[in-house]
Length: 197
Image 1 (cartoon, helix red, strand yellow):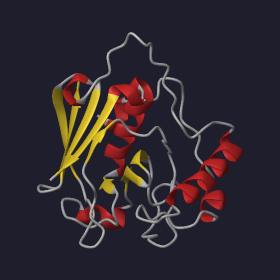
Image 2 (cartoon, helix red, strand yellow; image 1 turned 180 degrees about the vertical axis):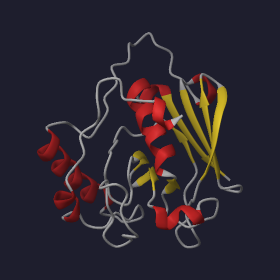
Image 3 (spheres, rainbow, N blue to C red; image 1 turned 45 degrees about the vertical axis):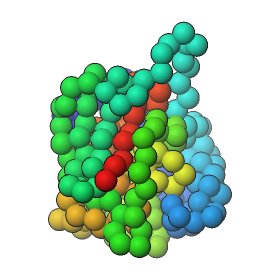
């Protein structure tokens, strides 16, 4: 499924590794997480000429969606370490995930993504490899603050299906790309993310 989904308007630009390396560690629990993300936003704009945010133009008459009424809904179940992808209310795929390990638990969410969507991101503190030049957190879709659904490099693939992250939701990069491109296609207000026990 990941191969058939594109952004519809070409590829999203990728921030260079040189810029990424200048960004401090992204700790979703840090009091400074928003400042770190804003710094990264600046690099992204400098490198690509585009905002890292998806802004949907939502007609005021359009009814807001939630969960299965949205075009795209991802339901992450921490107890099973699985994510269920729904499109137009129909279950279309299931992915292994890694949510936060002990001491770094992933909070529950039930909301639209916050609009920050990157193709590339790299954590210096928790480096763990790189994925095709996109850093170790490729195709990130941020839910709230520093918490995102993102891909993970090959060194972490064997851990998918177990709690192993530092708070974000790790998925295989192919699945992260699928979700990232779907968010680009349908917009943040037709996307819903549920993270539950």
